[in-house]
Length: 262
Image (cartoon, one colour):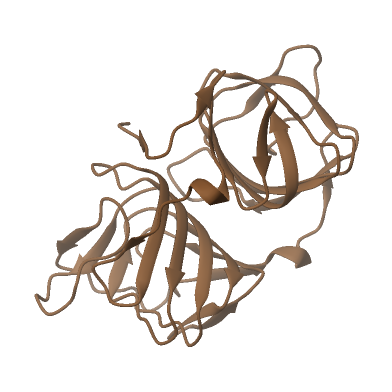
């Protein structure tokens, strides 16, 4: 993978992008902007924020791999229905749709692969890194494009770590990947035991702040954790995170359940 960290601050296997360091750029489509933490023009991998003005549309597109969007504000509507603030939207490979934002909308998003846009020359390309233009395959009418989840409705699970609990968002069942998307809540004073990342881990801080290897990641910020990095995560006053893990964790000092739910 040729991931380009657009705003690096790398120390001990951790790249951190605070919200104040995000660089917003206009999309080729009117009314859309993005702030990329990283992007891969070849594979279409993307991590960052996407913003829509009221009445902006995404354009007709087909997802070639899993896409994740946590709705921080606003919402999008397609032929399946609407997704709103506090919801987590999933689009699996083959999902085909066009969405509109009826009000200003902001998402924290990760794409696991490219998005194919209709090759009609009247349509502008997408905002996302690695987007392609081409012939969209006929959508399967038996499969709706969205899996929308209200994050607060998911049950909490124990993690084996004191003062840390987890919501499993997506286990990648029926995909070619062995990954996890989870929400982690660290209560004040939580200290996760040292562990080794067996794959890359992306983190977005919904609320509060965390220390990752003594690097502060504040609310609205992102962290990218390198494969094989040894990590220590803690918080003084509490934190709520979304974590996208490309592989399981390996504890260095104990045998405990996997942090990300593998």
